[in-house]
Structures are given as structure tokens and as C-alpha cells.
Length: 154
Image (cartoon, rainbow, N blue to C red):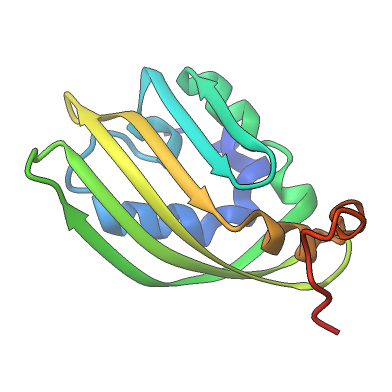
């Protein structure tokens, strides 16, 4: 399989490997993006900016294309896999470790991912993530300091 279309997301390789470990036996496909149904949905909920929703496998891949410009993952840890009563429901908990590409600031984030499978494909993926940790790593916390939403860690 030609993986050249995934070169721009190589900075997330530890994440892709972790997901393969967690649900690779439950889905068909050779890569994280191949795991999604053509009409699959990826949502991320952020406390400060709401829900980001992307529909369709190709659009999901496109939405990840700039991650390599902002974050680099070195490793993942703390994987916990929970199965729902319905065998097509999976909940993942995990932690990422890396850095902001432009800042070099550390990036350590915890995630909860709620996954709904259909016909061995991801039909729906919902992520909860600490948006402030992303902002710290990328150096974009100034705009929320003004609103008092972020306490200085210095």
C-alpha cells in the first residue's frame, strides 16, 4: 500500500501506532485514516472553543495535514481500552508526549476517545483533549491569559 499520502502526518506516528495496538484487530485498513468509513465522522470537544466536526475520511485526513507544523509526538503511554456493552463501542484513554514544533515547549496531553464501529470501520470518533496543553506547547496562550482562563505556571 502506498503510504505517501500520509507523509505530512508522520509527526503523529506514535499516535497512529497506539491506535493500531488498541483497535487494529477490530477494524479493516492499513492506517489510522483507512480505519474510517468513507462517511466517518471525527469530532473533538474543547472546553474553550467548542466542537470541531469533520465528516468524511478524505476530509479527516486533510484536517490532520498541518499537525506536523505545530506538534511533534515522541511517544504515547497509559493506554486503557474499555469495551461497551455493544461490541462496536470502544473507549480509549491515553497520553501523548512530544513538543511544539516552533516553540520546543513540552507537550504532554491526556485524551479520552469514544469510538463507534460499523462494518469494521470507524463510523464515529469523539475526542476529549486539554486545549490549554496544546496552547502551551504551541505558544498560543496569550489570547486566553487576557480572559483569565489560564493561570500562569511560572
